[in-house]
Structures are given as structure tokens and as C-alpha cells.
Image 1 (spheres, helix red, strand yellow):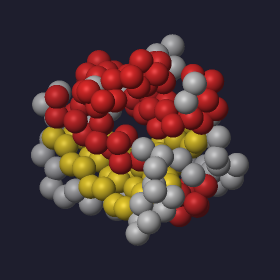
Image 2 (cartoon, one colour; image 1 turned 60 degrees about the vertical axis):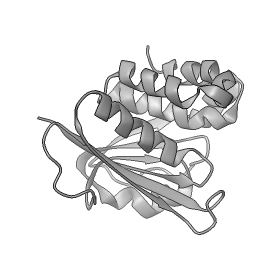
Image 3 (cartoon, one colour; image 1 turned 135 degrees about the horizontal axis):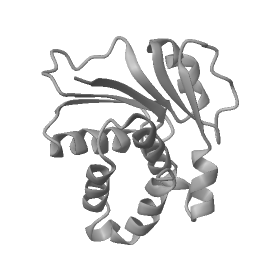
Length: 176
């Protein structure tokens, strides 16, 4: 039985909330127990944004995370502020495109992901969140990649359909 308690943080406008929504939606598609709790700073775009997602095979008694099994940080202020909430033995995913500060803890596994640079090479820096999502799913297998791909196709449909192929490439950079 697995329970993943994920905390995702960064600037508003980096797609922080979208990462959480997509994980939660994929978990629901797989019949897992899921909670999603977003938090926005007062400015939204450019301010702070974070969310918590819990994905479990068992019922979830509380959507609030006091100790995360995984932290995803897309900017340096988020790393400095939230590094301490990860349980010993947990994982921290760091967007090294914007974070030059090293993770200070030695009791966690650090995954350095140059998501902004990878997204830029794919043609659009705004896909950095999807690059990070791909790394997260590849390393922790919270949900199946196929479930995330289904959700991605739903998110990038209609007026956003022209962004689907780019985001599919961003997600698959970690399939290797």
C-alpha cells in the first residue's frame, strides 16, 4: 500500500497548480484515493503558489500535509521555505534552471531537473512544469505515465490543442 504526500511550490504562472491537478486527476482515473489542496499568493502570477496532493491506495483522513514524502520546487524561495517539510527518506525535485542554492539536507534524495532549459530546447520555456511532472512520474511512479498522458490530452484540447504536441514532448523527456 503506497501513499504519496506531494508538496509543489513556485511562482504563480509557472503551472504549479496544474501539476497538482494533473496528478490528482490521473490518480482518480486509476481509482486511487486523492486529495488536492491549492494555495495562491495574493498576486497570483508572479506571487507564490503551492499545492498539496495526496495519492493513496487507502482512504485519506486529512488533506493537509505536515510532512511530505515529496517536494517539487520550481524557484529558489520555495526551496528555502519548504525544504524542511520533507520527511527523512523523502524526495526533493529541484528546478535547477532557476535554483542555484543546493539542498542542505542529506537525509533526502535530490533530483536535479533543468526543466526550464529542457523546455526552452523543446521550443517553449512555459512547458517547464510538464518537464518536471514527467521527471516526478518517472522517478516515483505515483501514477502511471499513461494516465498522465490521458489527462494531458484533456488539458490541452480545444483552444489549447496547439500546445498538446509540445507538452507531450516535454512529458516524455523522462521516458528514457
